[in-house]
Image (cartoon, rainbow, N blue to C red; front, side, top):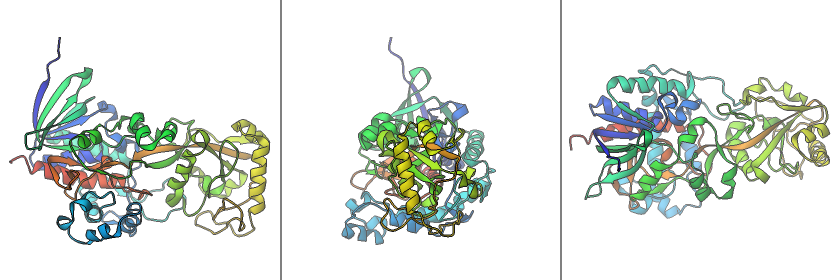
Length: 489
């Protein structure tokens, strides 16, 4: 017997309950719209990626973005871009050619909007009880300024979700959007979804906001876009497993333009033994990294750790079986609060000698000894300053070099942590304009469709750290306001 489809009608339907979706919901509710919010998880795990992150924000205070926010985006805007096309971006967005409107690069209009609206968005969040402060993080050395919500991303979810409920939003848990619905003119007028028990739901709406994250929880999409190395990836935190890419697929299926680097992710170094939330290991700056052949393969400290950990972690992914080990000696205790840079709940592997350590790691003892001996011979005497880039590098000609904090590894006991590449979020997504409208492949807005957060493509090359939650909130609010404004149409 076929199952009947349940029909529901709202002004705005929002897919996803992280910071982007919740910000969109509250903004739409403030404008008097009726709002449905679809969430794949149950109520106890609502909040998507936001729930599990520290939610650092690239701000110098709660009103101003960090001095390097816009410049960092500009330095990582794309790869081998046509200078003639990029030169059009100095004009107003409306005057760009259709090619440039959907060009796969970091749109300066979006970055300008992010910078302009970030401060007001934090002030807006504060009215719901979210507090911001400069707090110690897992970065011992840093190159920029950051704020965090007190209590992390969970505090954002626990403030905004109840506020949305109180304002009248209807939450649909264990519900997954499957397909967008369009009218004869191509406008989005709702979506189809599956609820608990695979119950079929059809939502009719004046506007749909997609805020359902990337595809780090979808092995098929990861393998398609990233290739065989994707088998070694895992999401950084539990929320990532819910992100299976349906929002991106639905939008692409109706002609949305892709944006962002589909072959890249925001990578974080994780201890694979740990099931803790974000079991990050960022202490490799003070030791060496070796692969399964017990060989060094990367400069472990080209700059401050917050600026370089992503590129280093991506190289770990390319090593045999996608794993490496941080090798340290007892002088790690010279680094103040070094344990702050390790969020694993597993202790380091420890041994009295390098041979014993190699045996514990399953590495060739002679190969590890040879690697450490060569490294030690390349280390030079000089002042060691663990709290800033100290220039204490290896001797010229040694490969791969180490630029800072290069001290000999010679005093037992010796320590090690295994490290894999964690997938914090995927870069590939769909193209939006500064009004959070989803654009088609010709640069025209798809009527009735908006998007925000990690499913919108914004990043290339190196992630501009501490901006993901921030852009989710900024463009979530914009999407909610724009979507609610169509309800009278």
